[in-house]
Every structure is written in C-alpha cells, then in structure tokens.
Image (tube, rainbow, N blue to C red; front, side):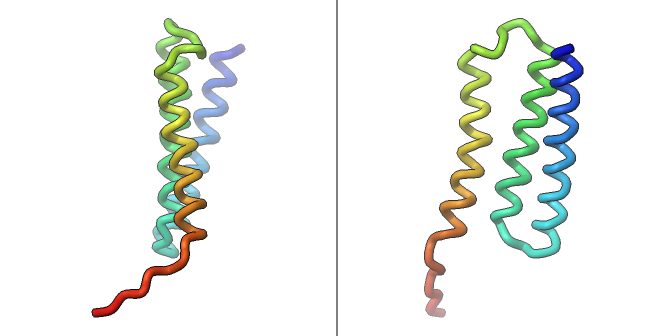
Length: 89
C-alpha cells in the first residue's frame, strides 16, 4: 500500500512541477521556476524512496532532500517579497 501512495504522490508532484514550468515559461518569473524545482525534487525523492526502501523515512538523507525542496519554496517567497532593485545603467 505504501508503494501505491509513493507512486501517487510522486505523480502528483511531477505533474505540479510541469504546471509550474509552464507558468514560468509564460511569465518568466523565477518564483514559478523555484516552485517547479521544488516539486520536481519532491517527486524524484518519492520515486527514490519507493525503489530503495532500505533506509526508511528516518534517514538523514531523506530530511536533507526535503529541506532542500522546502528551502526552495521559502526562498521563492522571500525573493518575491524583497523590494525591487534599482538598475542604473
């Protein structure tokens, strides 16, 4: 049953990543690119967890991968809320 859930979550994450990639391509906003990368990392991580179920979910590697994925989301939100830079050419 857990293999089925890993497959469903990875499929959903990769589908969401494709949607964010499309939004990034249409707008050029890096916010969408960071979200797409985050969901892509999460989807690949779930596939990795389903295929190599040797270490379990409490392995430090799993936490580091999730920190990287969620860190991209936090960075996207922070960068979106920073004031715009003045460019003087």
